[in-house]
Image 1 (cartoon, rainbow over the protein chains, first blue to last red):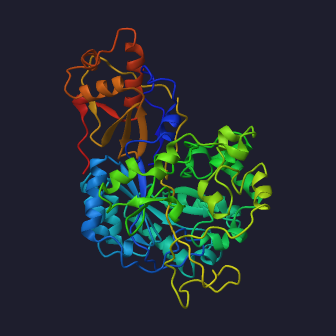
Image 2: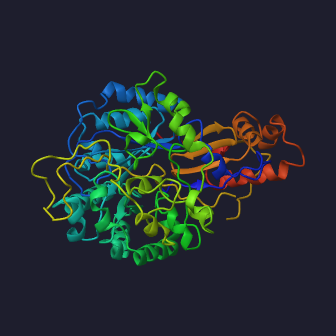
Image 3: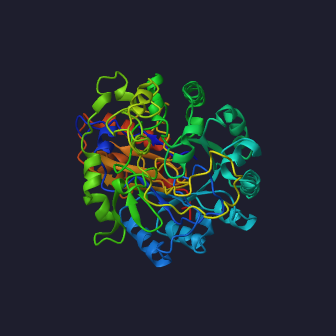
Length: 415
Length: 99
């Protein structure tokens, strides 16, 4: 059940010299898929939450507003949405919205920590071709997982996986953010997914939201990046990555995937209050393109925002122009650069050729902070107080358990 | 992967779980059952695919879309790969629509 971009059906007379990836880079009339975070509310308080989730925002879209977005996505023929949060299933209308989307030919893949996956729900989910589920797990043991996701979260996730498997839901995803702590557990994580008839999905830790606060401690060390790359090459398309690791392509061969930053080009993010951002990892005013409530609606934002037009224009390789590997890594992740204070036309902070480290040493002044923070205040529920992992009291960031909107694209090589 | 044999003289249709979205370069194709995204690389191939359901045979759909004799082998290969990925199915053995 992996989503994949396939090179099928290409043999007919071509449209011209542009490759498919070139076409994608220029943008499409509608996103292929998008990430939609339904709420900032969350029962957990993961230390690396991309959306700094915790508390509901009073401005969150109402049920009727969400239905209107779904209708617009149907008109635009957006094939599916990756729903996240926060914890989307804590919205009382979540199951209604799920049914509403699939009834409007918009497929749904949702990310959850498992808190609302009951046997009855699992049976319902197993019965639909248009719904996929992604359980978040950040360690193969409770010790490693709970350090990031909070006490009890490992058991919660494993219980949900068992419930889905018992209901006959095969091929759901087990989604892991790869960190310094769990990179040695990749085999074990895959074994867990296999045990439940699920598929492992690995994504990159990003310095977005509360992730900025733990980035220095959790992002992969240089030798771990190589270790991850070799592991991904060995496992090929059996493991999904949401096209997360294209910066690793500079080690040699490209990994399966488009190897393209899809932000504003083929993907985007709608946040709980309806703001549209270029990607789920870039929740900052600099990457806000508009709101679904604007006069032209979501389609107007997608098609006419100045920000998205800029992203679709040919990009300057900047400082990476002289690097032999630019064609494979394309300078890496925009959000990772932005939130570490690096220029967007320079190397990724985790550039495998080491250019990121030298660039980081020249960063002066404060790094950009996320524009929103919905973290739980007061006693942080579910997370042990770990010196160094706790965000400063004035830390604001913003985004969360979102997944890459390219989630699940495991393209065979475009022909 | 070798394409399955594709009979140009049979009736074909899009798999009921497949959605096709026209794009300037051709079309994006998404299969809700396999969750795979693929694409049609030309508008002409899109026209052929759109004509399949109503044309008596795939060959007739190609003619309707103006596929030249010279281009027919390439189009046939493209249709075969769509069949191999379960995007197309023989009209006689159409699977029940998935809810």
